[in-house]
Structures are given as C-alpha cells and as structure tokens.
Image (cartoon, rainbow, N blue to C red; front, side, top):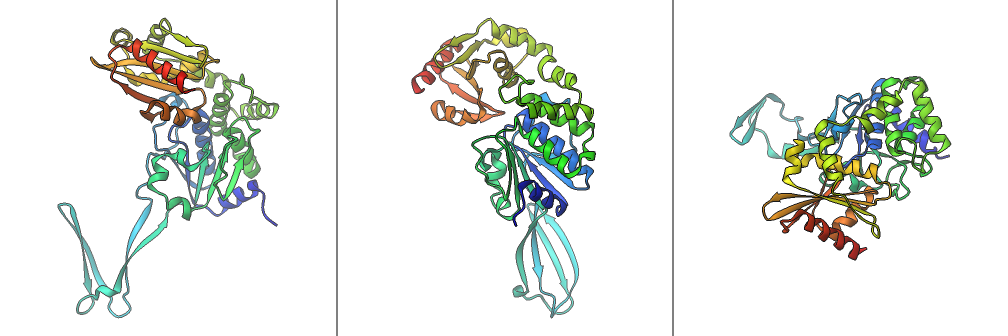
Length: 375
C-alpha cells in the first residue's frame, strides 16, 4: 500500500540529516516566509537545513527572523575523491603543495613506487539527503541552481511543495494543493502533522507573513475559510499580524516614498491592455535621493495601488542616448512571455530592457504600444 504524500514527506524527514530548501530565482514573500518557517522547524527536530536561491532575497523581508544558512549557489556540496587501492602497497604519508594555480598532492608509498593503475577518480555522493522545493511550478524556476547542478536533481529525492495549478509534479513526493492560498498554508498543515508542538513564534511569524503576502492581507479571492483558520492558529502561536502588515505594507524609507510621489504624478494608464507606466527623469532620482535600484520595490508598490493593472512599467535615462525600462507583471509566471515580446533580461522578478531612445516618455509609449500590438 503506497503512502500518502504527507506520510511520504514525514518518512523522508525521518531519514534525513541535511536538507536543501530551494526557492525560486525571484522568490516572493510566500516562498521566503514558508522557506524560513520550514528552516526553523527542521532545526528544532534535529535536521541541518540550508536555504538556496539563485537570486537575492529582498530586504523587504529583513524584519523576519533570519536563518543562519542561506546561500546563492551550491558549489562545494559534492566532493571529488581520489581513491587508492592499498592492498599491495600502503601509503605512509600524504602532503599537498600549492604552486601558483596548481595544487600538487604528494603520496609516500610504503615500498617502491605507486602503480597508476591503483588509483581512480570518484564523484562522492552529495551531502544533502533531501531537496524540498517551495513555490516552483517547474525546476527551471530555480534558475542557475538547477541549470548548473542537473545531477543533484536526479540523485537526491525531491519533495515539491506548491499551490500553483500549473505545477508539473516533478517531485518524488508532491505536496501540491491548488485549493490552498499559499505554500505557507500547505507547509503549516504538513508541519502540524509531524509535530504541532514544535511550531514556535518564529515559525508562526514566517508562515503568517507568507500567507498575508499571498492573499494581499486577506483581500484576494484565494482567501478561504481554511486559510483564515490557518492564520488564526499561527497568531495563537505568537505571530504578530499587525507587525507583519506594518513592515510589508506601511513602513517604507523616506527616499522610496519621495520617489513614489514623483512617479505617481506621471502615471499613464492603458485601459485595453491594463498597463500602468510612468517615465522618470534624472531629476526625480536626485530630488528623492534615490537610484534605479529602488525600482523593483517601486513597481511592487504600483502593483499594490493599481489592482486592475496587469503590466507595470517604469522608464528612466541610463545615458544621454539610451533609456532603461523595468517591467513587472501582476502574474509573475507570465514574465517569461513578456521577455519574448520585449527582449531584455530578468532580475529580482522584473524584466530589464535597454532602448536606443533618449526620451523616457517616448520609450514608455513605445513599449506600451509594442505590448498592445503583441497582445
């Protein structure tokens, strides 16, 4: 009789010592909150966890308790072994020497010299017992971690946790529930099945932050009675709802607020394609004491303020003859499709495009028209 996914998950954890938690290249708050909560839970039950993401985790989540082990690549997670057959000739000494870019390893045999046939090269097992992916509809969402380490995903069992309807069920165990409001809700239920007593204030805070983000503070249609019940349970565990909302929706640095104010006075709305776009000048950055690195957050605030919008664009001068445009989608999974239309590259959940158009307003108008024509 085959085990249910939850039972399989529990069994995997019982047999694991080191677990790799993987989140998308551009993780949203649900992925971050659920990964952090899972990390602290695994620590409490005696497992050594690591969180990895190809991209950077936004400072927006700095208010959450921070796991000690977060990495951007997993190089070094697998040893390369030189194996020696010492049946006929023991090795009595080993030393190494770094000579410029060359590392020399010296072996002293018990007698005579070593036979080259007695040694071989072996790839050791990866140090992780289990991979848990969160909020990834497919493995490509992991970015360079997947592209640079394909063997990892064939040799280590995967638990796939997600609430997206387009999930490809690529794991050996798939905790995929499209009726859940978020990955955080799924993980909350899964962890309670293992040990409800282990859910402390830190874990509850991280998971509640994920739920609040995924439901836009319980305003989206994915807010179900079961989701509200999960949130209430987490608040009983000590998660502070108002503190989470204050950090996620209300507290912003002064330079962000100033730049947002200048941008709001230049908003353009394309009703047909549901595009919200605005041009920014060098003066806007100077007067607000801000810089283009702020724009991913600005786009996120635009998305929050214009619930009808599907595509959000900001243009700004990158040189006297060029304009940069940054684009965010209301549905992040569609960013790849927009990249096929406009070109450019993706970073931090936004699409960045360079245009040979000196005027930022003209550049914004050009992109909006190109999107409307493509759609």
